[in-house]
Image 1 (cartoon, rainbow, N blue to C red):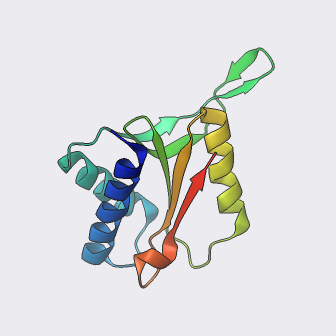
Image 2: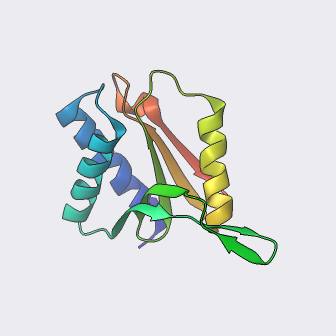
Length: 123
């Protein structure tokens, strides 16, 4: 499946979840509902996927987790925060670099209109 189709499905499903739940809930609620919605659409979705880091010749599991990994190609980092900060952008960019994935979506559900909480990143 083409990456633009995957990201389109993620955005569409995120809007549906946000319209149903509204803002102000915990990130974990949006994560569970979005994973469910994407699976209903036939997409393969990993939840809280471990992300080890490679340091020199050693691979270390230091507790990093991808919120969602869709079709093994798109990282989805979810937030439910009052204000987005540049650190969240840097976090997703680091996840892309560490994983070798090319595309990521940063989605903040704590907004009135979800389109105001969406950002796409490419590595």
